[in-house]
Amino acid sequence: MAPYLAKHDVSAIEFCARLGISPNVFRNADGWLPRAQCFHMANEVAALLGDPFAGAHVGRLTELHDLGPWGQSLLAAESVAEACVLAVANVSSIHQGSDIRFVVEGGTARIIFRFVDRFEFDPRQFILGSLAVLRKVPLLAGEPAAIRVRLTASRTHGSTALEECFGPKIETGCDYDAIEFDRDLLDLSLKTPGNRPSNVTESLASTIEAAKMLSERLSDGHKLGLQTVAKSLGMSVRTLQRRLKFCGVDFEELLDDTRRNEAIRLICEGVHSMTDIALRLGYSDSAHFTRAFKRWTGVAPSRFRTDRI
Image (cartoon, one colour):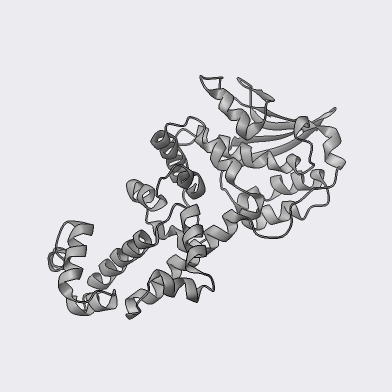
């Protein structure tokens, strides 16, 4: 979601804070979120930006390169048919609860998407995003005109915007959600892009590494500014800034959030003085640390510690 938020000048860090999720989820590229939380996040993005098809746009911006072993296995397939089989067989590696079926009838092939049990939140945005990703599988044949999209949702005002993500062949009010395409595509070899990581992959990887470095080294008293982190990651300051911006992340906001999390952790350990914590986090004195902590939590660090005893 970060690239989509960034395109609309929305900070991913601020968005996570709004939902009560630590932006430090960036530390783990393979991290999992409960399905209900995934649905909730997708719905909040749509509500925040006033985009009824936000999920589809997020899915369109997601490259198969960026979906770990699942995506890599599809790109390594020898034909569209093999890629479809792999997409169905390995879906549990990227999402629990999805039911994807690959059906071939007559001259038509379908990748049908649905859920196996009940869900707490409206799954519409998640379904749109999933279909936009699944469309990329037959799209690897290089024949977009042969691909159609079937949606259970009814056509609503402004739904022509879906064509940007799904192409012009969209049918709504169907009995199931699916990507449908001509059977002839199944025997075609994949026209895969080069092995160079996509902008999304590079940007997310750099953001994760920057967040990880701040978390691991900040509390040891290291002075970790933008230039230091960029040099440690083997890139220029400008490159790191560009990659962070692509994910909707500002370095100073990321540093500030890491300081807050580390401050709370160190205070809860109960063995460090406030002066020691301030110096560990890179503040020149405890007064600057106290002002920052009040901004984060609304109370002084000494009061925060007392309330937890």
